[in-house]
Length: 430
Image 1 (spheres, rainbow, N blue to C red):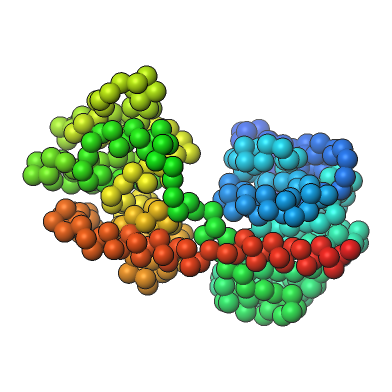
Image 2: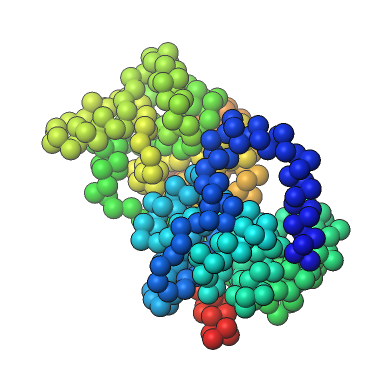
């Protein structure tokens, strides 16, 4: 069977060789870690390990708490973390500084065997759903249990894989255990041939990764607080069109609400200058968060940002920025880009508004709307009306924020359930 897959892979590589060579030459991120992807990660010293695979940044974030708790429970089995992308590898190196981090091998038998020899896994954990045939078959041959955690499979993926059920079924049956986020995913995997006894619904670990409180001593929080706004609106992960909409609304409402503040955190740092020009074009002063933090660090008593727009030019502080908000708008949602993570402000108890395009966060959208813990607007005009409503009567919005935090907290616990699943699989192997 492995030979068959290798032949298929090599045929595809041969047919697409010109394109592959072009990508290798022109795309630095494709070349990143190429030696490791060919089966030569840095050889581990010492004991066997638990190999956690996280495709990219999102999965790395999901796995942080699971890896930490696993190592606490099994100190004799340190974790090694692999990723597929360069951004994922950078995130893994940041979040797991004490662990071995490497690029996931291509699913060719020689590359997979090379990775096994050098990593020496006793146990493999695949975050979400990664069914690479040669990896799973090599692990089975070497008696290394493979577990999927936080698994998910969409209806469209299920329909495609159903045509290949004769291939997918033995792979699923080779897994020691599968945890999934919800009942529909379990049903689809069983429909593809997974053993029903091996599939467990544990919920989604993403609810365990969001913070429900932020230290009010955080520099970003304090810098925004020092701006002196009585009501601070935060636009998080905004895209072109959304910044301009918020700036237009703010410039209008600020005339009758002098205590109103606005903080914008554009999704892409390269847009900061353009957003600043838009603010100035609307007659608004604009201040970079990094400068405000420097003022704070230097002990200056007052903030330059009184009455101005705060523009977030720092990274990794969005939770602290949302924590300083009285009302949060989550971007990529008024424009057709699939939305962004509205759980971050919701978990902090902030009233949340987002647009109609939240396809990438459908589960979180349904959770918050179902709990009456968020508002969806369709247009800039509707966003304006909701902000006006908030300024006239904030009490319903405060209640909405409390409901949002409660809804998120009720969904926590998947990480612990997955840890128990891994513990059972480890004991079964022993």
